[in-house]
Amino acid sequence: MLRCADGSLYTGIARDAERRAEMHNSGKGAKYTRSRLPAVLVYREPCCGYSAALRREAAIKRLPRTEKLLMAENYAKNHPLSSSG
Image (cartoon, rainbow, N blue to C red; front, side, top):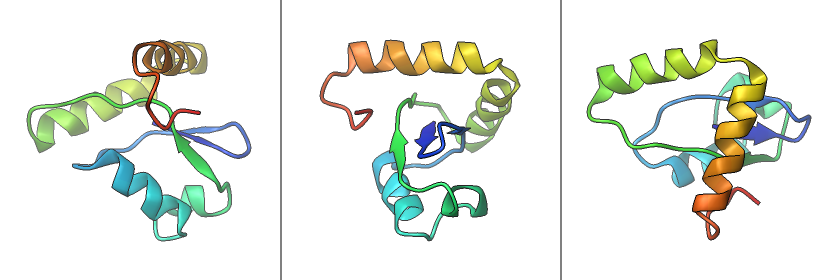
């Protein structure tokens, strides 16, 4: 999950979340993030397989914003060296 410069959250899947965040920030990511740069990686979780990742992405997208922000906050607490700045 990325937090964009406008405060919005973007959820997607990637094999390498950090590299994908860099792609977004270079303007080569999703159309949504291009106009909302910079984007910061605030949450990620491992998944076993592409279809499972797609299902989890869809589930996260259905969550209320408050729950997504709580996920990001908890991730930052448990991963202090992450790029969740």
